[in-house]
Length: 455
Image (cartoon, rainbow, N blue to C red; front, side, top):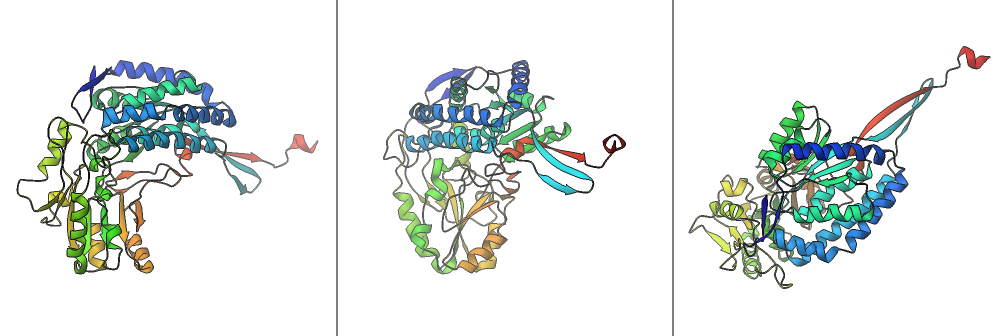
């Protein structure tokens, strides 16, 4: 059994089964059977059921949000948004089910048409930092495209996944079509990745584990989508709106446990001191505490293990801007901006996954781009400037899959999301999301006359 711990209190709030490889095999068997019927269901009927699933999620938003607060330590307002995002993803994917069109391609001697056919069973391995929405990034388009889904949530955050599977059944999804397998990654996750009847894996997590998933999928010629780590830059030019750019939640959202967190703050030298003062005031004002309190702006880290990891990057006496955090039970760490780091230090180039950023100066546009690209990651980032030409030039030069100009926004379910370099492989979300869960079949139909048609 797995124990689920409330990260704000360190209390055990639930226990769930730890699936074995045999358990996973039985779940795959059920999924294969369910998918045969689902895959031949008319797109309009699939869409109708998925819309009903969305409505069912909508009617349980507060319940799902409360579960997210308890198991992940998310702020209650954020948790409500996350539950609502699952609803919206299901509605968006449902519309795609009716618009998953093939193509008619002009050819000599006949007609050529293409079809998008479901892959079969899709394995979705979801992370603990955003348990509900990132799981839905995978399961919503996969189901809409006619696949069955086996969702393996993180060990620390299985409760919302289990409840979503119950709501799917309540909404009318066939038994076995959308299942949740709880357990350890090295057992249940590996069994899912290795199973021959699971032709695609969607994995979100660390780059190290993502490489292992990719290697195991490659050995079986299995499709894989990877959304991995990040060390995103926040590039602030001298002509920017410095007050708007000095937003600590660019790296503090979800206590910094966000692959898109702008944890490398790059500021032009001529405004470095002014920006640092603005950021210090903002960081020191952040309210850290009880996730259920509507006034709280940042909650705890997910676990003792994660807290210990974050502490390793901030040694005693490190030069830094610091906020405050509660004492006592819970996995708390104060908002922190390291100001004395070298550009090549561990804190400046490695993903910390906590409420810690580094503040680094740059000289000019070329230097800013050089520093922005000086990591193995390339997931997200922000560019702050009033110069439209510079915004376009730097957007083209920074090696990242998702950039924002004068904003810290990264993810919208109706636009594609994914990373460069070690930040991942493939794209999720957006108008092409369903196609990633299909095979494209090409069919040529000859129109040449034959002897029998001549007669």
